Image (cartoon, rainbow, N blue to C red; front, side, top):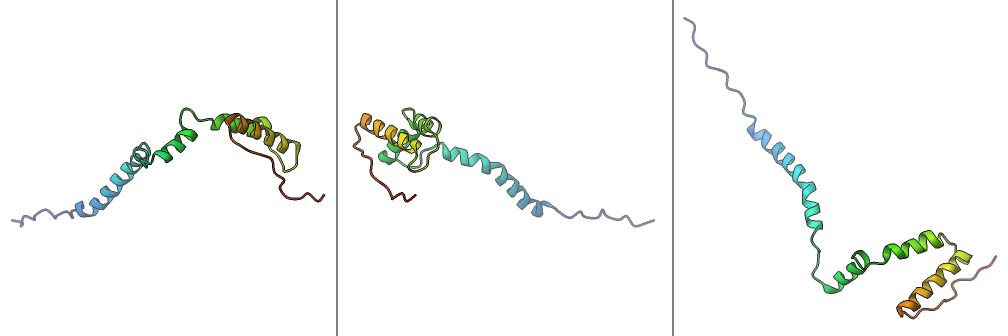
Length: 111
């Protein structure tokens, strides 16, 4: 009679698999954590909230102003007619908003 051999014990992969599982879980959850944090405002400071609302909120005029300066008036070099037009447009807007502004000489053209 042959001696009955016991089955060869298989090595346990559980300890080695644990770090891999933890890494896979972290990689899966990491992309969802950032948007969740981005949905809350990072400060309770009312001044910062007001500034953000003016630039990014519903009453924002950023898109309209950027369109006028970048698309309608377009690119401009200092001293060019487009630069003069952009400055005139800006001064007119400031005046309409009640902001004091004036044109000042900048640099010296030696051409």
